[in-house]
Amino acid sequence: MRVLIRNICVFIAALAMPVAAHAEEPPEVLEGYWSLVIHGGAGTISRDKITEEKDAELRAKLTEALDAGEAILADGGSATDAVIAAIMVLEDDPNFNAGKGAVLTWEESFSLDSSIMEGRTRNSGAAAGVSATKNPILLARAVMDNSRHVLLSGEGADVFSREQGLEQVDQDYFSTPSRVEALERFKQRMSKDTQSAQHDALGRDARFGTVGAVALDQSGNIAAGTSTGGMTGKRWGRIGDSPIIGAGTYADNRSCGISGTGTGEYFIRVGVAQEFCTRVRLRFHEMMKEAQAEVPLREDGFPSYIVHASEFLYPAAEVQAIADEVIGEMGALGGSGGVIYLTPWGHSGYSFDTPGMYRGRADSSGRKSVAVFADE
Ligand code: ASP
Image (cartoon, rainbow, N blue to C red):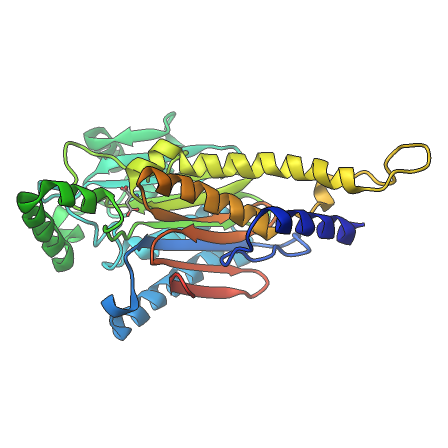
């Protein structure tokens, strides 16, 4: 019967949605299954703009982040620990716009944002505009675990971070020559042509580097986290989507875990992360009903089989189509970027509207890959 239900679902999905390039079919057996998906930002990443050495270096770092999370998940550890471990590898690497290597604000300082969420309880923690925490994702976790709050910001968050005993660093620690140059270029463009510089900062030309991870552990729990320096030249205390639960990060064991990267203003306006999870959850119920309606009736008019949620297989193409729709809606408003996601049924995938997104995934079946360009 399971096969019949699967076939009905695949058929319905094929009628309604295009086949997606970035989705993988979930495993048949979920017991003992774990999965991890990561990103290192999306943007105008193209083959002619990146040397072979840099490409190899970035892919090696993504693999290292996957390895860090995988070690925890394979050992039966929690999704939250795996997300933190993967993100910390990327925060410590100067290539990514999080922790060391973060972009500079207009005032030539660093103002970091992070968030984490657990799908079992929907407990979450986030920090915005912090200036001295070496690994901002640890601060998000401390807010989640050790405070009554969800989001702390600015000076207060810095104080909380110190009180929590998290490692503090000078602002110089975050600085890298390429980010200093990027700010100089941004300021030059801004002085020449405010309109196009604003577009660069918020639109399709910006190059991102935010990092994120989503994990499903062997107990079936999902966690998602995101960490960023925000956008080059940001000012007036601007905060993007990354520390906003529901915009840049969301996790709910009933539907999905997701982390986003891109023009934060548009991710906030659409509520990208929660919108995706909500649609996945509601579509699941709809598809269950559709599958039930396809089951032949007995002579007495009752269904010959009652479709049960635990044996229902949610086609990967359906989940991917929802991700693509939400990214499409964000893009239609003028934004740009991408997401990584996982579901409690074991789907994992990406959706992005940029030429590339640094990304990778691994699971307990031995599948492991990293990719950069859209056509991979
Ligand atoms: N979403 C981040 C922000 O708006 C930037 C990024 O993803 O690169 O702050």
